[in-house]
Length: 196
Image (cartoon, rainbow, N blue to C red):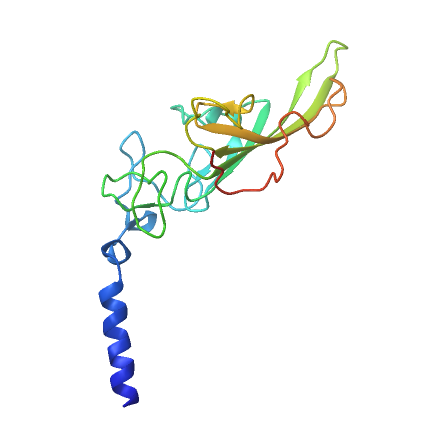
């Protein structure tokens, strides 16, 4: 009796599984995913500072746009991190590119970066006093969707249309900047989807 119940349960679970759940997505390690120049995306850090498997960029600010050849010197270092919904580390729609807006449950990609992204800049600049001064800057950006016709809760915080800044932290003692910019702070300022 127990074997038949277990067998029936397995059949029911298989019948209820969606086709997307059975979908096979290409992984970076497969070597079939390519970048915008048609070169294979590889595991680990590339020459610009991207580690797509880890959802991270750690390099010179001038290299975030992937110039060729990569910039060798810059005054600003940048660390970017992003969620799987912003830019995944797999290709489920078969276009040989990393998926944007990938829904992990359905395996469907919207083609639009959703989720969240952080930027952390750090550098030195020459001040009016002739000395170099250090600064740090951190920002959280989230996808909030299109603006409504009226009553936009993200008014004043939107950048790039469907995205909003939910937190900025700027420290530059010489320039007189210290800590969190209260005008951009959203509560909660955590990560995740934000909808209108």
